[in-house]
Length: 207
Ligand SMILES: Cc1cc2nc3c(=O)[nH]c(=O)nc-3n(C[C@H](O)[C@H](O)[C@H](O)COP(=O)(O)O)c2cc1C
Image 1 (cartoon, protein in one colour):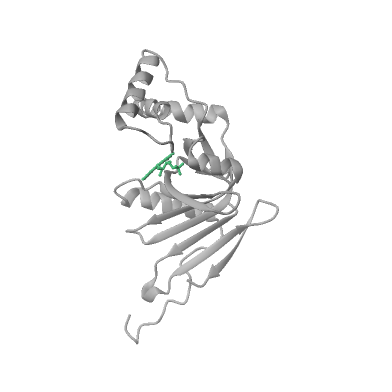
Image 2 (cartoon, rainbow, N blue to C red):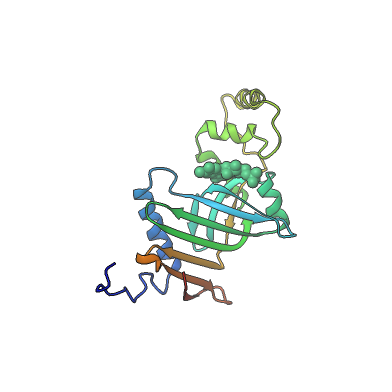
């Protein structure tokens, strides 16, 4: 920006309706990102505060929160069982946007997990049966054998959803939008859920 150009003195982020803004940014990401626009980093922590983070896919969102599916016996699943607080992060590099979301997780109902599990490709369902997620694997051939065994077991029928394979929904208490602006004068707006649970209070943050 040259000396004579004015600095934009207003925020480009709306003051209300964070879930509507999330929808718009998600739709724009879907239209522009070549792969996995719904990929998000999921941070969990042990009860004594040791964090870990990994990518998962957002498979549903709405007023109740943000849902992903996984193996509840995995490392993340063990952490979630012991400490329900988690954080999500979306970063769309080409759009230069970030969204951070924090809140407690709860497990989806069995019928919701069943419905999503059976909407997946059969190979993905069999993969979920065969994978002992996060556990040591002696040899990749063992995994392939377990996959073949699952194929045989469910041949000609529906693949049964393993009890450990389920979804979690993060109920947002904080949602923060970050937007790239000129001269690194980026725009940040934080929404915090009101104590009653219905409305949101928003504030700008220094970048
Ligand atoms: C783009 C991307 C999307 C992923 N989506 C999922 C997912 O939706 N669910 C899942 O369990 N793992 C997913 N993974 C694998 C996880 O990042 C991770 O390796 C796995 O869940 C085990 O994590 P944990 O040992 O911390 O439990 C994804 C990985 C990548 C790179």
